[in-house]
Image (cartoon, rainbow, N blue to C red):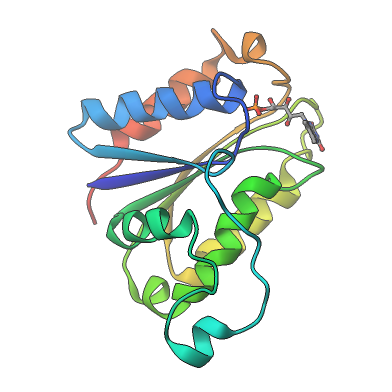
Length: 181
Ligand SMILES: Cc1cc2nc3c(=O)[nH]c(=O)nc-3n(C[C@H](O)[C@H](O)[C@H](O)COP(=O)(O)O)c2cc1C
Protein backbone atom coordinates (compact mmCIF):
# COMPACT_ATOMS: atom_id res chain seq x y z
CA UNK A 1 0.00 0.00 0.00
CA UNK A 2 1.09 3.54 -0.68
CA UNK A 3 0.80 5.62 2.46
CA UNK A 4 0.99 9.41 2.50
CA UNK A 5 1.56 11.17 5.81
CA UNK A 6 0.41 14.78 5.93
CA UNK A 7 2.59 16.28 8.66
CA UNK A 8 0.82 19.25 10.22
CA UNK A 9 3.44 20.26 12.77
CA UNK A 10 6.07 22.98 12.41
CA UNK A 11 8.33 20.94 14.72
CA UNK A 12 10.48 18.41 12.84
CA UNK A 13 11.42 16.82 16.17
CA UNK A 14 8.21 17.50 18.05
CA UNK A 15 5.59 15.36 19.71
CA UNK A 16 3.64 14.35 16.62
CA UNK A 17 6.89 13.70 14.71
CA UNK A 18 7.54 10.86 17.17
CA UNK A 19 4.03 9.54 16.60
CA UNK A 20 4.27 9.69 12.80
CA UNK A 21 7.76 8.16 12.77
CA UNK A 22 6.60 5.26 14.96
CA UNK A 23 3.59 4.80 12.67
CA UNK A 24 5.87 4.87 9.59
CA UNK A 25 8.21 2.28 11.17
CA UNK A 26 5.28 -0.07 11.66
CA UNK A 27 3.97 0.54 8.14
CA UNK A 28 7.40 0.00 6.54
CA UNK A 29 7.90 -3.22 8.52
CA UNK A 30 4.62 -4.49 7.02
CA UNK A 31 5.92 -3.80 3.49
CA UNK A 32 4.06 -0.55 2.80
CA UNK A 33 5.68 2.51 1.21
CA UNK A 34 5.53 5.81 3.09
CA UNK A 35 5.80 9.37 1.79
CA UNK A 36 5.68 12.32 4.15
CA UNK A 37 4.59 15.80 3.11
CA UNK A 38 5.53 18.53 5.58
CA UNK A 39 2.77 21.13 5.31
CA UNK A 40 4.64 23.61 7.52
CA UNK A 41 7.72 23.58 5.29
CA UNK A 42 6.12 23.71 1.86
CA UNK A 43 5.05 26.80 -0.03
CA UNK A 44 1.29 26.51 0.50
CA UNK A 45 -1.39 29.16 0.20
CA UNK A 46 -4.85 29.12 1.74
CA UNK A 47 -7.79 28.49 -0.61
CA UNK A 48 -9.17 31.79 -1.98
CA UNK A 49 -12.60 30.33 -2.67
CA UNK A 50 -12.37 31.86 -6.14
CA UNK A 51 -13.73 28.72 -7.83
CA UNK A 52 -11.10 29.01 -10.58
CA UNK A 53 -10.51 25.25 -10.25
CA UNK A 54 -14.19 24.52 -10.84
CA UNK A 55 -14.81 27.15 -13.49
CA UNK A 56 -11.79 26.47 -15.67
CA UNK A 57 -10.73 22.88 -15.01
CA UNK A 58 -7.18 24.26 -14.89
CA UNK A 59 -6.65 23.43 -11.22
CA UNK A 60 -5.85 26.02 -8.58
CA UNK A 61 -4.74 29.57 -9.34
CA UNK A 62 -1.84 28.94 -7.00
CA UNK A 63 0.87 26.85 -8.58
CA UNK A 64 2.60 26.11 -5.27
CA UNK A 65 3.46 23.18 -3.02
CA UNK A 66 0.15 21.52 -3.90
CA UNK A 67 1.70 20.67 -7.28
CA UNK A 68 3.98 18.35 -5.31
CA UNK A 69 1.28 17.11 -2.94
CA UNK A 70 -1.50 16.41 -5.45
CA UNK A 71 0.18 13.50 -7.28
CA UNK A 72 1.09 11.90 -3.92
CA UNK A 73 -2.45 12.44 -2.69
CA UNK A 74 -4.07 10.99 -5.79
CA UNK A 75 -1.79 7.93 -5.74
CA UNK A 76 -2.12 7.19 -2.01
CA UNK A 77 -4.10 4.20 -0.76
CA UNK A 78 -4.02 5.64 2.75
CA UNK A 79 -3.74 9.27 3.90
CA UNK A 80 -2.49 9.91 7.43
CA UNK A 81 -3.41 13.19 9.12
CA UNK A 82 -0.69 13.89 11.68
CA UNK A 83 -1.30 17.06 13.66
CA UNK A 84 -0.83 18.77 16.99
CA UNK A 85 -3.99 20.20 18.56
CA UNK A 86 -4.04 23.94 17.94
CA UNK A 87 -6.87 25.69 19.73
CA UNK A 88 -9.05 22.58 19.67
CA UNK A 89 -8.59 21.87 15.98
CA UNK A 90 -5.97 20.69 13.51
CA UNK A 91 -3.04 23.04 12.92
CA UNK A 92 -3.53 25.82 10.34
CA UNK A 93 -0.65 24.32 8.36
CA UNK A 94 -2.41 20.99 7.71
CA UNK A 95 -5.84 22.64 7.39
CA UNK A 96 -4.49 24.76 4.56
CA UNK A 97 -3.57 21.61 2.61
CA UNK A 98 -6.92 19.95 3.41
CA UNK A 99 -8.87 23.00 2.18
CA UNK A 100 -6.94 22.76 -1.07
CA UNK A 101 -8.31 19.21 -1.61
CA UNK A 102 -11.28 21.27 -2.90
CA UNK A 103 -9.68 21.53 -6.36
CA UNK A 104 -9.77 17.71 -6.63
CA UNK A 105 -12.95 16.95 -4.70
CA UNK A 106 -14.59 14.88 -7.42
CA UNK A 107 -11.59 12.61 -7.97
CA UNK A 108 -10.77 12.27 -4.27
CA UNK A 109 -14.37 11.37 -3.39
CA UNK A 110 -14.43 8.67 -6.04
CA UNK A 111 -11.19 7.05 -4.90
CA UNK A 112 -11.16 4.17 -2.45
CA UNK A 113 -8.85 5.27 0.30
CA UNK A 114 -8.17 4.63 3.93
CA UNK A 115 -7.38 7.37 6.43
CA UNK A 116 -5.59 7.55 9.76
CA UNK A 117 -5.47 10.26 12.43
CA UNK A 118 -2.40 10.84 14.61
CA UNK A 119 -3.05 13.72 17.01
CA UNK A 120 -1.40 15.03 20.16
CA UNK A 121 -2.27 17.71 22.68
CA UNK A 122 -1.03 19.05 26.00
CA UNK A 123 -4.23 19.03 28.00
CA UNK A 124 -5.23 15.94 29.96
CA UNK A 125 -9.00 16.55 29.68
CA UNK A 126 -10.63 13.55 28.02
CA UNK A 127 -12.59 15.89 25.69
CA UNK A 128 -9.58 17.94 24.51
CA UNK A 129 -9.36 16.24 21.11
CA UNK A 130 -13.11 15.81 20.55
CA UNK A 131 -13.57 18.72 18.07
CA UNK A 132 -10.48 17.74 16.07
CA UNK A 133 -11.64 14.13 16.01
CA UNK A 134 -15.14 15.16 14.85
CA UNK A 135 -13.57 17.19 12.04
CA UNK A 136 -11.45 14.21 10.98
CA UNK A 137 -14.53 11.96 10.89
CA UNK A 138 -16.48 14.54 8.86
CA UNK A 139 -13.63 14.73 6.32
CA UNK A 140 -13.58 10.90 6.04
CA UNK A 141 -17.36 10.79 5.73
CA UNK A 142 -17.44 13.46 3.00
CA UNK A 143 -14.59 11.91 1.00
CA UNK A 144 -15.93 8.36 1.45
CA UNK A 145 -12.59 7.35 2.94
CA UNK A 146 -12.52 4.57 5.51
CA UNK A 147 -11.12 5.39 8.94
CA UNK A 148 -8.38 2.78 9.44
CA UNK A 149 -7.51 3.92 12.96
CA UNK A 150 -6.53 6.77 15.24
CA UNK A 151 -4.04 7.61 17.94
CA UNK A 152 -5.33 10.45 20.10
CA UNK A 153 -2.47 11.28 22.46
CA UNK A 154 -3.67 13.52 25.29
CA UNK A 155 -1.45 15.07 27.99
CA UNK A 156 1.51 15.21 25.59
CA UNK A 157 2.87 18.76 25.59
CA UNK A 158 6.41 17.88 24.63
CA UNK A 159 8.39 15.13 22.93
CA UNK A 160 9.67 14.12 26.38
CA UNK A 161 6.06 13.45 27.44
CA UNK A 162 5.40 11.06 24.57
CA UNK A 163 8.78 9.32 24.55
CA UNK A 164 8.35 6.01 26.31
CA UNK A 165 4.56 6.42 26.43
CA UNK A 166 2.22 3.69 25.19
CA UNK A 167 1.11 6.02 22.38
CA UNK A 168 4.25 5.35 20.32
CA UNK A 169 3.69 1.60 20.41
CA UNK A 170 0.02 2.24 19.57
CA UNK A 171 1.10 4.23 16.50
CA UNK A 172 3.65 1.57 15.48
CA UNK A 173 1.05 -1.20 15.83
CA UNK A 174 -1.45 0.81 13.79
CA UNK A 175 1.09 1.26 10.99
CA UNK A 176 1.83 -2.47 11.07
CA UNK A 177 -1.84 -3.42 11.03
CA UNK A 178 -2.86 -1.61 7.83
CA UNK A 179 -4.22 -3.92 5.17
CA UNK A 180 -5.17 -3.35 1.56
CA UNK A 181 -8.97 -3.43 1.20
C1 LIG B 1 -0.68 27.55 18.77
C2 LIG B 1 -0.83 26.39 19.70
C3 LIG B 1 -2.09 26.03 20.12
C4 LIG B 1 -2.26 24.95 20.98
N1 LIG B 1 -3.52 24.64 21.38
C5 LIG B 1 -3.70 23.60 22.24
C6 LIG B 1 -5.00 23.27 22.72
O1 LIG B 1 -6.01 23.87 22.36
N2 LIG B 1 -5.11 22.26 23.61
C7 LIG B 1 -4.02 21.54 24.03
O2 LIG B 1 -4.19 20.62 24.83
N3 LIG B 1 -2.78 21.80 23.57
C8 LIG B 1 -2.59 22.83 22.70
N4 LIG B 1 -1.33 23.11 22.24
C9 LIG B 1 -0.20 22.22 22.62
C10 LIG B 1 0.19 21.25 21.49
O3 LIG B 1 -0.92 20.59 20.95
C11 LIG B 1 1.18 20.22 22.04
O4 LIG B 1 2.28 20.87 22.62
C12 LIG B 1 1.65 19.23 20.99
O5 LIG B 1 2.34 18.18 21.63
C13 LIG B 1 2.60 19.87 19.97
O6 LIG B 1 2.95 18.92 18.97
P1 LIG B 1 4.22 19.09 18.00
O7 LIG B 1 5.44 19.14 18.86
O8 LIG B 1 4.18 17.91 17.13
O9 LIG B 1 4.02 20.36 17.22
C14 LIG B 1 -1.13 24.20 21.41
C15 LIG B 1 0.15 24.57 20.98
C16 LIG B 1 0.31 25.66 20.14
C17 LIG B 1 1.70 26.06 19.72
